[in-house]
Length: 290
Image 1: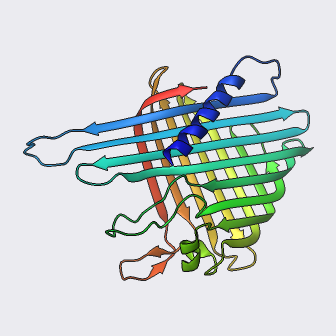
Image 2 (image 1 turned 90 degrees about the vertical axis):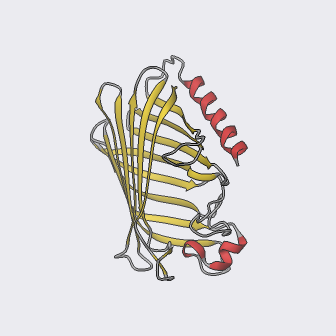
Image 3 (image 1 turned 135 degrees about the vertical axis):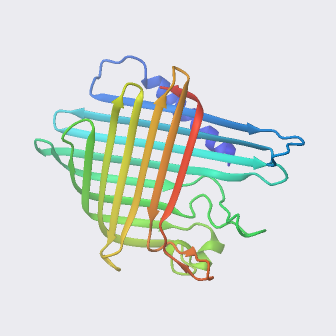
C-alpha cells in the first residue's frame, strides 16, 4: 500500500516538474504541491501521563486547466495518506484518499459551456473500525470505488468559481472485495460488486487566494438518484486551506463532510443507518510546490 502511494507520488512530482518549466502555450494553467507533515512524541516517567506517538500525513494535489478559444478542460488529482503509531498499539490509518476529476467544456454562450465530466475516487489501503477489537477491515482499495460519468453544462464566470451541473449522470459504486460484497457493503446488493445509479449531479468549486500565500479550495458535490429515493441528496463537501510559511514549509487544514444514504454506519444501539460523516486533518510541515 505504501509502495503504491509513493510510486504514484513520484510520478505526479515528476510530471509536475516537467510541466512546471516555462512553455509557450499559455492556454494551460498548472499548479500542485507535495506536503509531508510529521509528529513525534516521546515520554519517559512523565507524571502528567500520556503515551509516546509517531505520526505522518502526506498529500499531493495537482491541477492542470486548459482554456483556449471555445474550449475549457479542467483536471484535478488529489492523493493523501497518513498513519499514526501510539506506544504499544499497531499503526492506524488517519488519512487515505485517491481523487481524480476531469471536465471538458465547449462554449455555447459567454461563460456557459456544454460539458462532460468524469469523477473517480477510492483509497489506497484497508480501513478498520478501531472501536472494535480485532475487527476485520471495513474498506480497502476499490471497496468502495466511485466512478461518475455525466453530461450537462458548466458555468465559469471567472478564475475563482466554477459550477458544473450534469442532469444526466451515471454513478457506479464498486465493491471489489468478495467479503464486503457478500455483506452488501456500501449499498450494493449482497453478492454483487456494482451499485449502478442514474441521476443529477451538481459540483461547485472555489479556488481563491484571499491573502498573500493563503489559499482556500472548496468543492461541494450534490447527487440525486432518479431511480431510488431522489429526495435523498448525497453530499460531499471538502475544504482545503493552505497557508505557506516560507518556500519550504506550510500549514494545511482540510475538512471533509460526507452523507451517502446508501452507506450504513453502525449506531450505538447496534443498528446501522446513514449518518453525516466528518473528518479534519491539520498539519504543519514540508511543502514542495511544482
